[in-house]
Image (cartoon, rainbow, N blue to C red; front, side, top):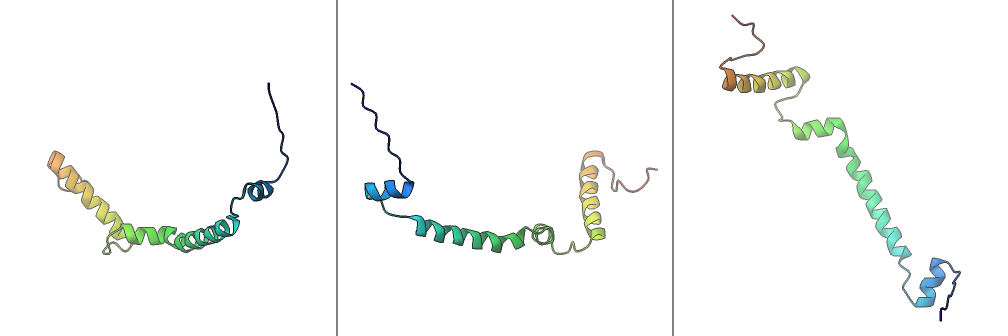
Length: 91
């Protein structure tokens, strides 16, 4: 024997019929908190703020940043090939 029952109701009606609590106000409050936190943290995702946190404080402009990278490349190159500065012409 096979019995089929079709129930046509909304989720709110099913929740009330089964005696489950209505958690929608709590969900709305949590979503509001999450939205506020996300909005507050979006300021930290700006490129300028990211560079300030990732790079050392002595690197403040593009020229200094370029010199910093060249010095790192020079250190790596001198350790591998014995050359001191890759920007200088070879003699």
